Length: 505
Image 1 (cartoon, helix red, strand yellow):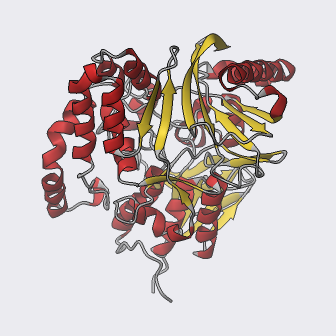
Image 2 (cartoon, helix red, strand yellow):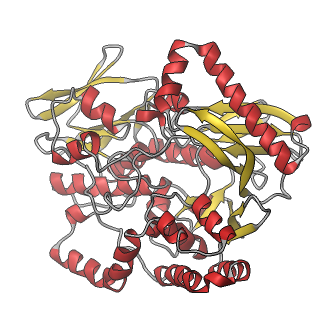
């Protein structure tokens, strides 16, 4: 029997481990090279004193066995073994006048909440809730990527999606801010403007509400560490190998084909196929030297259509206090704005507590996490490189301002603090090499919808890309799904019949 090809994957985040797992299922020999000392990439947790900080997962999508995303997870990890927490409301928003809006997971409760708080906006509320109900009936045809579909597959997709196309087109052309501007009630208007990303099409914000209504999102107890660990274990058990502390210096090419990689320590590893599952810009412009660029690559990295998502800080606070009587996620107005950098001043904060997860803190204690924007990523990156004492001073200044705001809002904060940790865009660049130091890649806008995934670069053979930089911004399940889809594309190109299950020996 002809031995299938060897594939080297750059990056042991969820995208890389998903691609590796699905490629292993299909008989390819894979090895992952990861620059850091552990797997997970941006799906990471870290320990500070007695607190385990989840630096990634707010909610995990694709947890219902009845929904379309579930198999992409369950083909790799045992989803039934995970203890999920389902929340009655995703978040609440408090405005400056003390008005509170609950974003309930159940659409009926959400409708009741909106109508009771903003009866003057009944028409817009009915439109909003009707959109959730309609899209809750939609089953996205995601089992195959477009690149491997037959004519029959495409006709089936068209038939499935036809009832929703007009609705999707309409709400892809209305941003959250545009929808909020139609509202009369100031509390509801503020809630939509605060909880939803302003520039983003309303459709993208509605879909998480759809998934919550269908109980397809939840928080896994154990958080990012659990999910990354399960993904790594599954990949290793399938026969794959991960090389840690192995930063790639360049991708070796021969003419217009890839032939392997060279590490920073000079080691060379040959292969038949290279898959980049790490930072996209680094792969194209550094590892490949900018020699291979097609129209789609140029549009993403050199054009005006794609914009990187706004960066944030990650402020974690460990309290010797039970915070579970507070809504799990709350957005609230602050009277004294917090200056972050020259491009960012915060007039509100978003705080999430992890009291439902016993892995985050000891009983009676609480882990709080906040992600204030930090748009001037270059400032943070350069400051850490040039003046670490000042960099640490700036982190403390912001942490102190956040703590003061929490004290004003909730009381009983300062005297109960046991741990404070602040990550900046410089932190993400340092640990994940993510371009611009953002946790997510591209902004999802009207202009980016429908743009092709950059699985390959025209003119370069045996090279593929996966993960958020190859697509657009999305949650964890998106990059796990992309591992499945990429494997289908590689199987088609190599004349291999695809399977998404581990073959019996």
